[in-house]
Image (cartoon, rainbow over all chains, first blue to last red; front, side, top):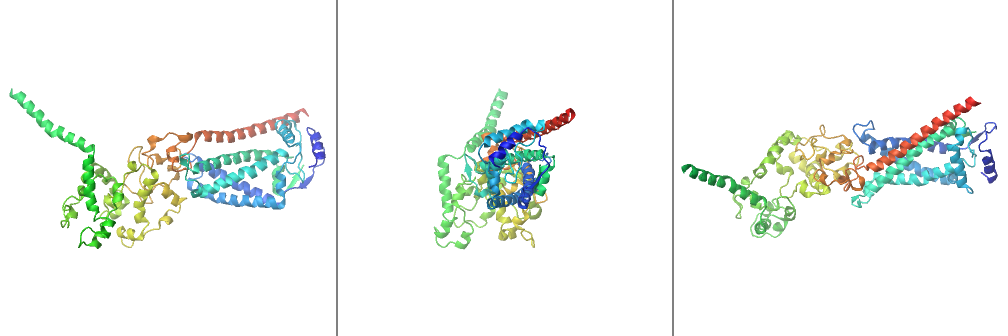
Length: 223
Length: 323
């Protein structure tokens, strides 16, 4: 998005757009395939992970040994899928979408936050509409970058050590060396779970509640 | 006068019958004196001079049947670490062993476990009778089939759970992971099931065997503070619910870690931190503060999202009405 376009978008902020609906193709098949596979794996891992961490015979959770097996298989699949995504992102140039472009990143984040906290209730439109060049607003790009390139490596790496606990240090601070690995895995998993809740909800911010969900299936964005 | 004399006589008799044995028992329970221990050590050294690998390699006497002796050796170092380390060999091998060659049939006079551990033996006997080993191999099984009196230490004295696991699992696996030894005990035609195959359902099987004992699952549940049962159960009755251990109120506290539970200090805020010193056990070694923070974060996000959605719906409705 050029500066001029950003300024125009800012100017439009708070006003209702009267333009005709437009459709732009923004998501290639491989991104959509990755997204839904990733979603399926993350949901599976969250459900089984909760069943393992909060294991109680009285809670209606997935049976422990079954949860271990599912979690292990889904975890290994996620490792490969994540590796695929990072490589494909680099090769196709899609990684650029996750980089918020200066100038005015913080200001645009603030405008976006203000929209979520105030403008949306007044019926305002997205302050930074989706374009073919820029699929994400600055806040989205920052959040996705944080999730993909910071939280995901932690969860994948700690998960792999959990899968092969013999590689974890034998002992740390008088405790089993797996403890910091387990705590990091747990905290990063909670961040992913929390992100999932907010992510699904923010997808209802499209032209209609279902619009963004449809975009994620067809690849065509409508506004 | 006669009555007074009679009462003195009774008091004296009471002292002889009750008080003196009590004093003797108290002295006994205090353990042998250093002089006695030195005497025992020297006497045992004499036994080990033949009954050890070193004895077979350098026999102290000529004309010994070394082939026979090789099957009768013990590890002196292992014995020094065992529960019976302060006992003379002749405490159990008591008749006919003073001279060499030993008396014919001396072996038959060897003391049994119940000669000293009668109370324990009574309790264990009842449990053992229900054991899978008693059902199938009663005539071949004795205490020493599993509990090598020259080597073993009770769990409480070993203290370190990893050492307890290593010692106790070696007992089970010495038969159940060895075709040769299994065949010695098993009924004819019964082939040894492969230990990994029958435990295939158990995730991280070999890691479990390093961290917990076979008897953690292959004995019935016990109450807090009670010793583990000698009723070894087969796969049909064995514990298969992972949550027996992998939960806040973990059975590990009444089993492998029962001697250490008194040391539980919720280190770093973790429940079952006494377990955590050795193993991170998913579901059992939890930190309630971290749990509250994580659940709180997820719950607040969900609540925030629901409140936001409700407000959006309400505002959209109001906007439509005012149009």
